[in-house]
Length: 584
Ligand code: ATP
Ligand code: MG
Image (cartoon, rainbow, N blue to C red; front, side, top):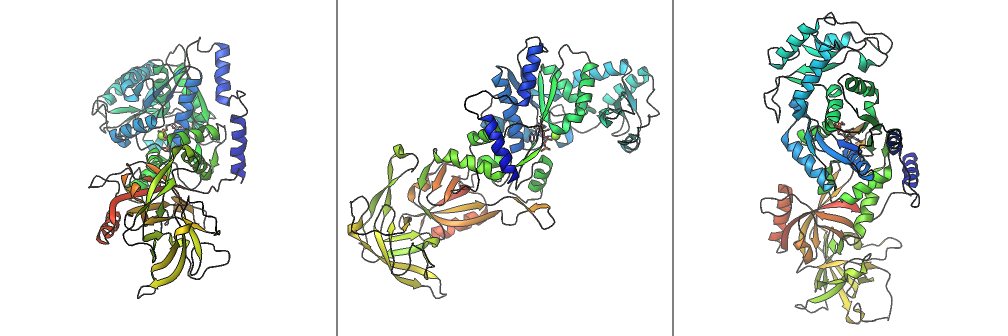
């Protein structure tokens, strides 16, 4: 509840009737402009992902913020791959990140790679050494950690701290040429081993790594550390405002130190904002990669994943994600946003974008005793309740139909108005039907319901003889298309100890019957399944070139073929249900 209230307050702040409201980042930028900090230069931001995984919804927040801030000020925004850690980075990730940023609707001014600046970064490091502000250290990683001190205790100087600049220059050049082993030496900034901010206690700024880089190959045997590389990347690109998440706040003094000592006319300004957290999910590329590597999910774009690729395959629209990022606002305190809020926005967006189709779940067969064997009628159905201007479509109706399992009860509970023996209900857009008999299989399960229909009650005929309380939807058995529907719950749940663990019920696979038009769905096309929710045709193609993924799904489809049903091997992912659990 507390979180929901938070969002509502934020919403109130961002959408106050047409009045322009500035967030704290814009306030800083306004200040900088007023003070002439960048001498009238246009605002320049960047989104700097490390290509070590797919982007998630948290990144979407950072993307929206960097791109829209630049846009608001008539400035520019770069997409920059922060590719300074060769072991974890890959071209697959580079490609997915470009696709995701574009899909969200943003176009970068320039596409940059930190690895293009390795030479420049190297010369900045040489500058620091020459100025007596950096030294090559032979201590091991463990020794460096042990001598760094704690919040209460100062660190102690490395025995190599006062190594002459010429010697460090020589060693640094040897490190570059690959003459030294991984971990045998590092380059450290010479700042202050007793600084209250531990990040300033002679941080490591270069390390040796003989790993092959996805772009520079084996050209480099040393790689810059984030805290050294990032400010330089920003400065090289002429970034004015470097927006990043809160965990970098304590690194800002080092960011400023690097820039102050490497001679830049207009050093960029780093501004931190809160990370986005979302209920029922985890938001760390490292943990998401574990799920992928362990086979807990069906790849980075599994519809349960909070990745942009997963949300896209799940049928979320870029507009709703952008709306979400705008409405949650930017704050200086980390918070957890309710996933229901995102679902709510997706539903609101889809409502006015997608057509309705009839699909029955847990199907029960209906036989209309008094309906002609070979007659098929075309019944007009509205394409969208929200958008009457989209008109109607024709849906075939016949003697044999399917209805939802949930629309029949052999022994109805109180206030159950749908089909039960002896009861008459409206079949939406068709006739009134009465259930006369329940036919069972040998195992006691329902084989079919024998019904009668009243020809007088045809929809649209103006019939007003009597009213019925229940309305059900249906599909004609002769033309039904068998589809596979995947329904989702959140990927992570809390166990009794309060830890986030995988939800064993995060996906349920169902075989359903749909009206014929559903077979024409294009991969990625979304619909409202009448009375059920919003669904998207899966965009991952199987061997037959149609939407669908695994063998389980194919087996289901083949079963449909065997049963003589016109089968389109179609798989649909649930996007969101119809009802919002989001409380305004
Ligand atoms: P992760 O911890 O998931 O790997 P990261 O911060 O290491 O994320 P980067 O590729 O370095 O991932 O992130 C690129 C940008 O996205 C950074 O500026 C980072 O601050 C921002 N970002 C990452 N996660 C979030 C989040 N949950 N909310 C908002 N911004 C985020
Ligand atoms: Mg990172």
